[in-house]
Length: 151
Image 1: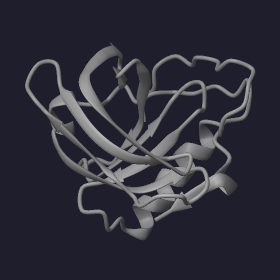
Image 2: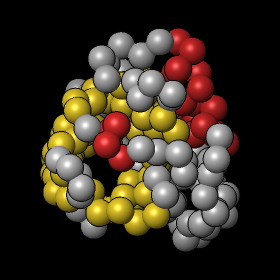
Image 3: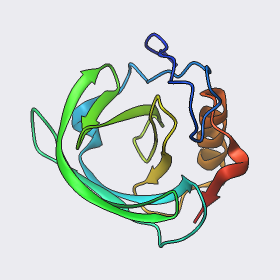
Image 4: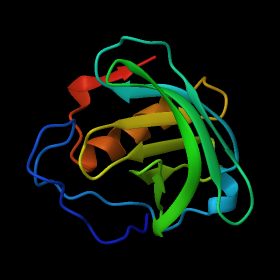
């Protein structure tokens, strides 16, 4: 898996180990992100139902989402502004694609400050092997898997 250069998060709370490097996937093909995605896991307490993301457009992609993040229902959307290989800014927040499986059935999204992270799947019924791979990617990027809620 090819990755871009690491960025260190600020030394503060979140779901990632302070000072741990984080890498985004440089192999992401933006056009293949388009479509509907179902949330299958996120960090934080279970306090809401899993959500999803719809990605549309050509050129600059648009994202519309309702996600359960840190136990809260979060809604929003807007342009997915490219910020580097596998890196986007959505609504002023960094969304890094940490991993996409070869067939773009599963995505792992994280952020350098560790304030959120989540796993998306096209069908919402992620296979055990892809869930295992997604968890390994999150752990490798410094996330605390004991705080990951699988829906």
